Length: 457
Image 1: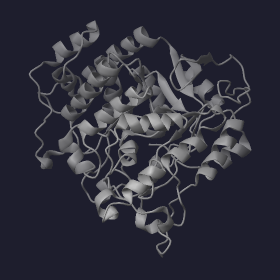
Image 2 (image 1 turned 90 degrees about the vertical axis):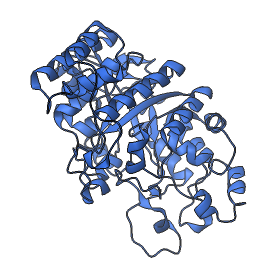
Image 3 (image 1 turned 30 degrees about the vertical axis):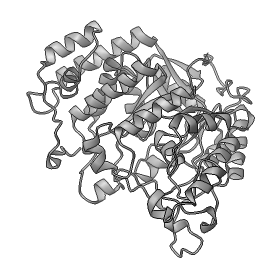
Image 4 (image 1 turned 120 degrees about the vertical axis):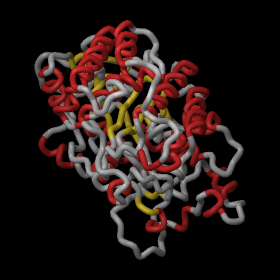
């Protein structure tokens, strides 16, 4: 990871605390401060590099806290990623998922590998996944200029004199494929009692652009259309001096937090994320955790926290020489551990096998994590950024891997309220989905088919 020194950040990884005192507070279960988190992330901000012995002390404290909080179960969900479109003009430097939206216009002669799905195509993808036992449908999409919340939103956006430049809007007829409205996509993907986990804060920001509608208003309408919970992605780093460089076209920190509270006001549970290992430093990571913890103090609505390690290989940040890599393995481990120790009001911390790979992903389960993602059946965003850890995971894989590290594999619902321990012997398949009957979700033929599907955040 690049140090970020050249950006002249106001927030630097220094503190008035000592590592020993921060570790003592972590071990005793006292609520940690930002300075405490900086000391734990750096294993002592007064010294260069990560000290291996101190790092292991932090990991041990986090593993103990995990054991006290959630026990020895490792959870996962049977899910499908069905992202609607890669068309986006936001220009985030960490992303290689998007395709320039102009390329999708009917009169464009630019070849591209992007996609836009109609509501009917989304419905078909979900129907097929439900037949295979999926419980959750996750959807995180690009900010297509033709996307609007509903037909009324289209009418409002068309009243602008220059809607393209003023509100990032072009009418659907300008494009080869009409994505429909957000409401239509939610209605399509919530078919068959699927649990629809969609509409990030950034997407709902796009869904109210050019109007006086509140985030809560939009989330409430989306909930009526079938939305069941909202992913707290698009968080990246919740410090504006980082966001202004990393994703200047996105909402600022205050707007992200407001959107999350809007989801809570609409009665939707959420998750929360951090995307780290790029230009930020340990102080930014600590401030991010503080803002998530404060949000949870206000709402009590976040079911899990998901650290996402920056995958750099084909992103603009790397290709332009702004960073020379992502987070180190030690940084990844400390991110999981400090998240567990700092977020004393969020029970579940996720380890991403898509980001870390199988071996390191399992190691994170002894660093404070207790959730191991889901079956995915498709993962386009990380793959486009240069990740190579796969796009799907069978229940048999989960049973074998989780038991290999001495833990108990448990199928869960999105909100963690439903849980099912896997039997001691196979065959292994989901049972919590609306059409699940325990049949293995992947076999030799279906695994190959799954690798052709689409996306995650």
